[in-house]
Image (tube, rainbow, N blue to C red; front, side, top):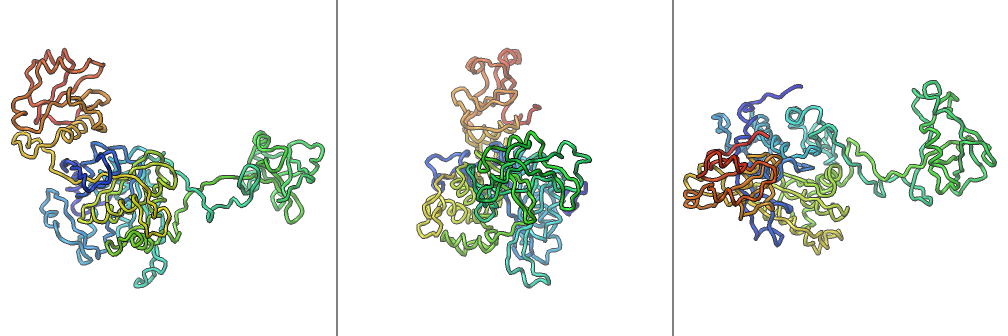
Length: 559
């Protein structure tokens, strides 16, 4: 498989591992909920690289759908490289806008994207899907980078999205499209199909069962015929007198009273073909009335009869060109205006584009992540799609800019509460729902336990320790402060004896009394974190304890 070499790659390819964990600080005054929680819809303000790392303890392997719209790197966006990578060359890049004259702009963009994509992959579930919007500026680089990180076999599609109806007329060829790159974590992942609406549905006939259309039962593939599918070459008999108002007649496998016309699978050149169904399936799909039968006959224009299957499928596979007007970039601008948030963001993505991505990848209870949240289109897409489909999904949005509250979160507030002046009835009444707002706090560093500075809360430290030690999802609902229990992994019950007080840390330890106070042994080894221990190894063995001293022994155990 080809790999991509670029300036700085050596320094950034493992940078995601060096990014420190940050506390996630709840902001109740900016949230729209009575109970701020990391298990609610989330809006996180902060650098997305740090935020993605902070989300790992709770959401690693849990996100079903990722949609991101990173900078296109056109040279006109003035995005800034700000990752604190330990490299003299990269340190020179910090804080400088990337413009069209920058000869290293592609290198900088790749250095920015690589660690973020690696963390996004860790957050993605095994059957998850990632959608990335881009244009020609980084398309080729992005494809190779994604294949390197996700695997070439996990490439699903390069969708062409008609984003500009007039086209960019300043080019020699007026470009009208952008791209949507689709990768999965597992090549066995299957996308959902899209629901047909009144415009896309071809089910223009009705019977007692419901809407349908017809397609010929004869196999139209010239490779197949009586010579290699003899079991699919047989006569079907028609009852001409049973013709209904739509011209459909009953069919049977046996020649009997009324069933006098015989049809065999010959093509228009009178060459032997074959049916698509075997006799058993034909029998199961015929009945005594044309309005309840899924296999019927109908006279053609030349007077002969054709045999037709009624198909009733209400979904369809998306095509690789998305050209609906609702996907145009100008639609995104109109949607912000309808919310009363116009002139606050350049080139917002239309919600229909994001909705379609979410529909293809998610179902009940799934999580959608957007780490380049911008104007908050993804939040609106999830909230409206939940209301329209009756399927509940959660969103996680990450935005570092100052407008994270005033635009990104405000958009979600207005969609939830409703906008009285909106034209859309759904937007007018509001979707309902909640979200919790978080900011990135201090880093969680073991050195701080020695100095007593910036000590994390018990819950944040437990979140960090549990994930770091086990690599599994942490759920704060499992915490029992009386016993110190913080969660159970595949191999361990995990306990933490800690208080965000340096004097407490200096004077507390794992004692015999604490060993005896642990809940009854249930078969799993106990992993206990404490500042010190005042019991010997034999006592730890007796109580099935693996002891880890704070702050020195924070490590990921073999599992």
